[in-house]
Image (cartoon, rainbow, N blue to C red; front, side, top):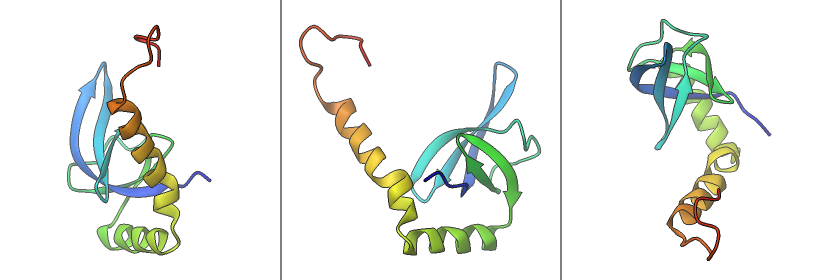
Length: 102
């Protein structure tokens, strides 16, 4: 399932003419494109779907949504296992003969 998840903008930069943000989803920080909400500022909340911020959101609504998603186990489904697997994969030595293949 793909969710549009609220997160807090913790940093913004221009990358090759595109406004990009680091967005914190309760401890998981991801790079997000701000092309659809160029007015977003550090400290604000945005709703993110497949790497794009879609709209700004007030803090109360964002926290309420995150709490509900957590209660339903959707955040773990959306972020938990994949992040744990990625961390394990990054730290694992590459098999012989597969250097640079990922």
